[in-house]
Image 1 (spheres, rainbow, N blue to C red):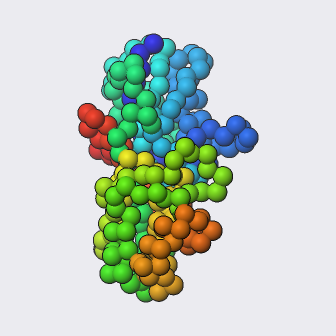
Image 2: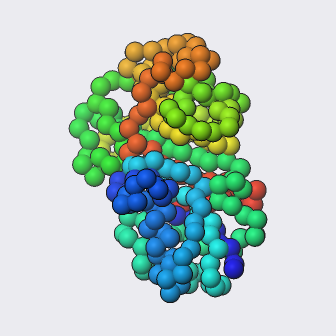
Length: 260
């Protein structure tokens, strides 16, 4: 059975995350929709899909990657065209390519990049309400930018780990953690981008939650640094809402997969 690597984009608003949920089989997930579409293309034969990242409910993607073994070979363009003909409108295949037999979307990944978007105008355009957090109150951008540097390097992120996580280690290495100001048709905003070798569940949203606390004056960079070393999730600021977060790309040894 030929193995394929699929690059996906989706609007996460209507999904309960990427991964199928055994306890909630009626939940709509990206994996569920993709597996159903692939089965439809192969006469009902089941196709299992592995994703590079288990995005939470409401989180979007521009460059999610999935791996799967298909019952027959496909020309790359034909597979993309056929998939998009049967996938729902909020989920699209951007690319497809044959992969080595040992390729796995998550285990073979070398890094992932996420983006969190914040609109700071007094009034948010309604078209952006599902894709950017609206914070009309003043934020100290400089303090937030300085605090973002705290997360660089190899660190134990236990303070940011979601309750009930069963990961073997909470140590991760971040190679990029930066905040920048942006202007769009609706006014000013902030974009936070972070890249690393892996992320704990809700880790990026928790980082942004900490940055927002600094921006609002409820915490300082020194406080965040202290709490980061405390390894106590209960003392960290609450995570930012999911809808501002997007998985931008997943990188492998032979290059990144991202939006075209």
